[in-house]
Figure 1 (cartoon, one colour):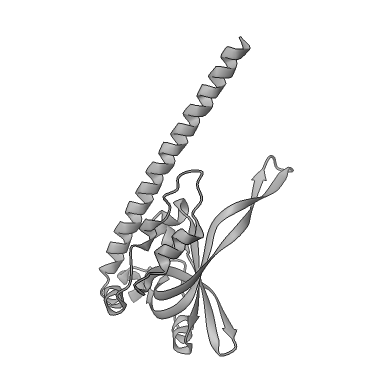
Figure 2: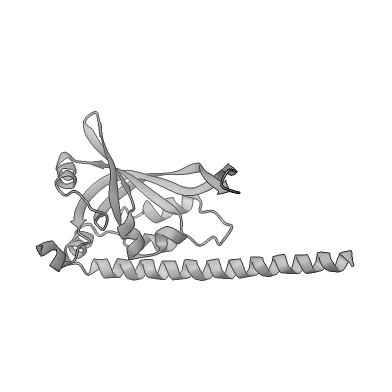
Length: 213
């Protein structure tokens, strides 16, 4: 009797794992397709299209990532291959500005992703997170500070990436009850990409009718 219960338990666990793996694969494929569709959509904005053509920028780098399944992790070398091109081409990404730091004779701008990115596609919910730290000129910093970004706004950025680092661990909380909360240290899929900002363009998330008001 105990053996039968044990076998039933094993079968149930296997079924759950298979369902999770299929669901994860489906979600990742859907996320990658949406990311590709979003990239194409934004490239139709004339100014972004001009930037990509001017710098011969890579626009589909995200499609190379997020292929390791439900329990897999993305490796730093995979992100490096996606962002640091052997042919020397820069990449295009969309992001919000989290911080600007003055460091000796240059500026470091920290780019992340905000509500606009999540609305634009589900990549940022389903896949690894890539944040950017870029050397920017004073003119680029002034462009950022002169265009305060709202919750739906972001920047189209042309970046030459030279280095990728992985945040090794992240803290995750598990609420067992209202009074019992545990904090675990787990491996992360968060990356910091460093390099130089070649150009950037402010993109307003407001509709044209809203901008006239």
